[in-house]
Image 1 (cartoon, rainbow, N blue to C red):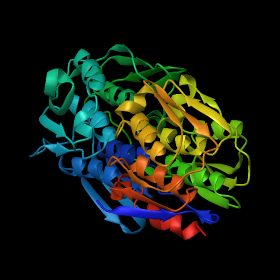
Image 2 (cartoon, protein in one colour):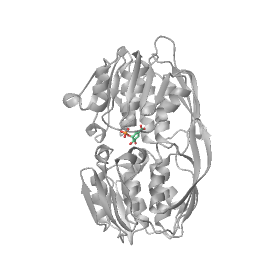
Image 3 (cartoon, rainbow, N blue to C red):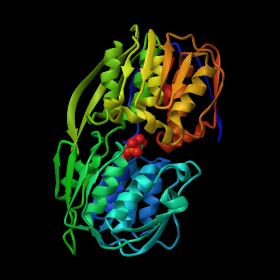
Image 4 (cartoon, rainbow, N blue to C red):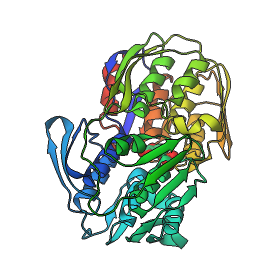
Length: 433
Ligand code: S3P
C-alpha cells in the first residue's frame, strides 16, 4: 500500500509526456475484441484499470499479444465471437470496465458474472442495469439490482429510446454497445454532453451512429455484419496531464511543456476554468491522432490566480479534475465554489468528502455541500499526514498540494496511483527542483 513523502518544491521545469489515455485504452481493447480481425493498438496504457479490461476479454477467448513499446495486437472475433468466461470477471477498481462490458455481455448469448474491488462494489450500477433491462437484457445484481456482483444471461436485445437521468459517458457507452446488439435503432439522449471517445472510435470502425447534439442513434447489427478492426495510437491522458498543469501554476518559477495530450473538447473543461483563474497556459501544435485532437500544453507559473465559480454546466468536461481543481483553488485569491458536482460522491471514493477532509488537514478553510465544496484561498499549506482513500486521483492531487506546502506531507496508501499513472511519483520528482 506504501506511503509517499513529499516536500515543498522550488520549481518545475522540463518536458513531460503523460501516460496514455485511460478511457481510450479501455475502449480500444473492448471494441477491437468485438471487431472482425486483427487490430493494432499503439501506446496502450499499461495500468491496473485497462489491464482489468484486457484480462476480461482474454477470459472470453480473445487473443491479445503484448509487443514492445506498449503495443497490443488484438485478434477480434466479431460481435458474437466472445466465449462464455469460465469464472467470474473481476473488474478490479474500474467503473469503465464493468459498465461498458455490461452492454456487450447483455447482447451475447452466454452467462457471465461481473465483480470488482471493495470500492467498485459500492458504486451505483442501477444506472446501467435499468436501461439494459428495458432493452430486454437478462441482468440482475445484488441488493435489488443496485450493486456488484452483476449476473448476465445475454440475449437478443430490442432498441429503446432512452433519456439518461445522469450525465455519464460510461452509461452512454454501455447503451451504445448494447445498441449494436439490438433489433432496430437505439436512441440515447444525454442529460449533458459527456466524453465522446466511444462514438468517435466505433464510427471509425463502421458502426452506424448518428449524433445530433445530445441525441445519439445507434443502428443494431446482426449476423456477420460487424465492426472493422482498428489501428490506433492512444494519445496522452488529459486527466493525468492535469496534475502537472496545476503543479506548474502553483509552484513559482515553473515552466513545463506537456506533450501529446488528448484535447478532446469533452475532456478539457479545466482549461477554460484555469483561463478564468488567470493562468498562462497555451495549447500548441494541435493535430489529429487516430480521430482525436492532440496538442502540447505549455504552462508557466508566476501568476496570481483568482478564485472562480464552477457550476453544473461544465462539470462533465472536468469530472475527473475535481480533486486537482480543489487543490489549485487553495492557491487562488478568494473563495472558489464548485457546485453541481454530486456525481463526485460516487467515484472511486467520495471525492467531495475526501478533498474537504484532507485539505483541512493541510490547513485550508473548506466548506462541504451535498453537491460540492467551497475553498478559501490563498491558503498557506502546512505539510501533514493525509489519506488517499485508495483513490488514484486523490493521491495524485494531494501530492501536488504537497509541493506547495511547508514541511513534509505524507500520503498514506499512495500506490493506488498505479490505477491510472504508474510511475507518477518518479515523473513528478524528475521535473521538480
Ligand atoms: C469515464 C467516464 C467518467 C469518468 C471516468 C471514465 C469513461 O465516468 O469519471 O473516470 O471512460 O467513460 P462517468 O461516465 O460515470 O461520469
